[in-house]
Image (cartoon, one colour):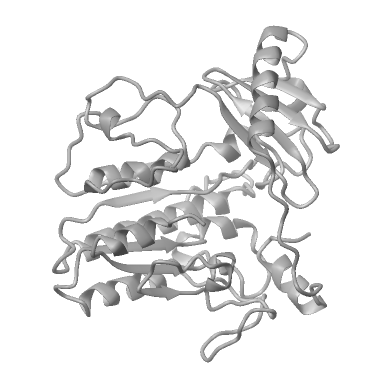
Length: 353
């Protein structure tokens, strides 16, 4: 029932293109709404509609970023004079740092020795850093390339991530290296970078907490396009333009995960976080309070729940009221049970144990 960003921009005469390396964003989930052209991941699951040129195997790597960027460049090149353009791209290199099965490794040979220190044992998290560096270089080249095209010289680029990774920051917490299972800052705090050649905003770095919820109204405000009245995010352009010192976003930010068997909810405030672990998790107490922005949170070792009753009362009260106001929507049941092949394909990219 909601209007997507692509639909709004298309209605304002933008030519729209969507591309995804992740099949979870394929058209079967309706993410293609509002796009003139949308390119699904060609690594599909068996229950998806298999068309010519697609594969239904889960043991091959997801589409690499340079291939996706090449498609985007070709799209703009072939439509000279049809701008402005809105291009939405999802790449998956950094997500795939744990992929080690034959054919799934996305790390290029030239990045295999990055960050290696002589005489030191190989750190298992270096692959994450190497893939981050690799895709950063690839994005940088894409930015340079697209700025050479007609209609694309004055492009605004927005770089985002949907989650982080725990890596080795929470040694006392079981299975905390990855994402989706815990609500610590390593997984919840993500980059939001806006860049346009020649643009020097009044405030180059935002210090306060903001939300991915605010990306859409910020972009529309930047473009001078009204945001839908029902949208709950707020534009950060007054902050970026130096018109105000802060944007009132309420001060409390609910967080939750229902990933696989996990059920956790919590609240971030400026200096504190409160977490209710509703399912057992080795290394985590049922209730947690941690300081933010200091040492990485580490379960019982950094838990201040007993020492901070005032923080607990305030943040727990907010969470309870928020969950009453925003009740969880029941998931849509699949039409059929997953078969063995589909299950293996989902396991191959990390969506099932």
